[in-house]
Amino acid sequence: NAGVTQTPKFQVLKTGQSMTLQCAQDMNHEYMSWYRQDPGMGLRLIHYSVGAGITDQGEVPNGYNVSRSTTEDFPLRLLSAAPSQTSVYFCASSSPGQGTYGYTFGSGTRLTVV
Amino acid sequence: AQSVTQLGSHVSVSEGALVLLRCNYSSSVPPYLFWYVQYPNQGLQLLLKYTSAATLVKGINGFEAEFKKSETSFHLTKPSAHMSDAAEYFCAVSEGNTGFQKLVFGTGTRLLVSP
Image (cartoon, rainbow over all chains, first blue to last red; front, side):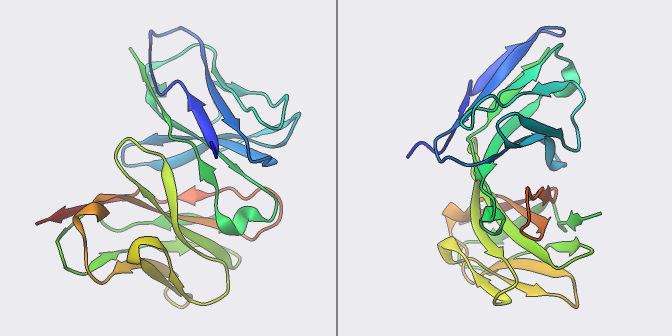
């Protein structure tokens, strides 16, 4: 019963470096999403996907790319990291009609950009 | 647009005291409302949800919340705080249950419990 798995748990990047945050779920959920959590700002939606091959932007998409080639995986790419992207990133999944039950969240990736 | 306001970034209580965490929302349609809890260095865990059924919702760990439409509130309560309740609590709102539902979160309230 893995649920939503995020890797890595911690990462330090230099400004300008690129990296991919991995997210995988084993619940066959159609919907997946990425949020970032910053102190005093709660969680904000970055990108989301309603199925394989379909992605859309959330509230704060700039500087991030996503793709959804399979139902299970939804990686988040930082093309050129900036200090403003220092944050804790959460991946979440859900199913149609499961909006009433909330999402299942991963345990997060803590990213520091220096 | 939806929004959520959580009054008080920090709330301190003594063990055994009443816990009250406030949440007010704005939504143009009947909302679905959620409370999530986040323990240190962990992800978010669903505490309870309101989905237009009973207005008094009971969740895990003895928490409950009451949906008050006239006050646009969904405050979280627990009669007697325990040390293990120390965590950050987030109120969130979504609209309906059709298609992908974006969750809009409040800024969070950190609950501190003293012996």
